[in-house]
Amino acid sequence: MTIKNILVSYNGSEAADAALKTALIMAERYQAHLTGILAHGLPSMLYAYGGQVPQSAIDQIEAADRVHREEVKTAFFKLCASTPDERVHFLDVYGEADETLMEVALGYDLVVLAPVEKRSNFPHMDVHPDVIARNSGKPVMMVPKGYDPTAFNENMLLAWDGKRAAARALNAALALLQPETALTVLTIGAPERAEAKAQPAMQQLQRHGYAPKLITLKAKKVAKAILSTAAEEGAGLLVMGAYEHAKLAEDLFGGVTNTVLKKTKIPVLLSH
Image 1 (cartoon, one colour):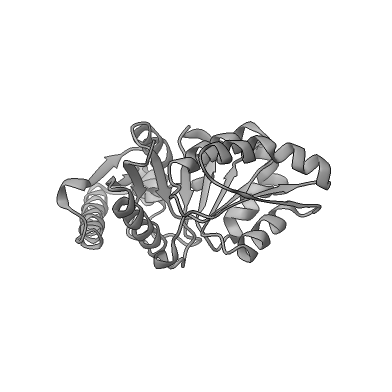
Image 2 (cartoon, helix red, strand yellow; image 1 turned 90 degrees about the vertical axis):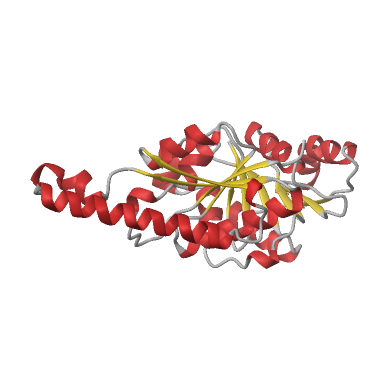
């Protein structure tokens, strides 16, 4: 299977522009349909203070929100101008942003999105990569803010821990690979044990016609080892399982997935 139906979360932010431009490159490469989605709830002021805001003010806030949503739609189609009209689509969908996007995502091959801005001007239009990756059941590609989309390539580093999420991420990545793609499998642990653990991933890739390189490392800081190996190998795409540990533990104590998403310089393909 190849990627033919891409959903990209787009709210007009600088970070979302990078995600959309990367998705456009993928849509062209795979001759895929690209659908932008602006999922949004109530404007934050109405959500927090709606019962205390005069109707005239509510009307003004809602009118301004409609204007902004039209601006986002216009910006989306402007960035997509070079893609054939029949393969470009846009959805403006009302509802809690994360939940709404996940419902729509069920009919797509891949979700592309950006990290949430630290000081978002439109928080009711923000979707959260960690929530989508954990709960959507779909492969999710997060494109970091400031990423140069012209640098995108499918040369892949697979961070393999032998668990279910990593296997799901590998299967999702197979749809993106090109014949010339360079592949590296990274496994953390003592060499003999790590090599044995990596064999299912190595065999899967080999039987699909690839010749992956295997790297095994002993490292206490797993996220740092993954990111540094990605840089050393010139990977254009990092593939990994997401959130094998409970979300509460990740949020309270940190975790590999959260650290990678915060510090990555290249797109990350996640599956849970």
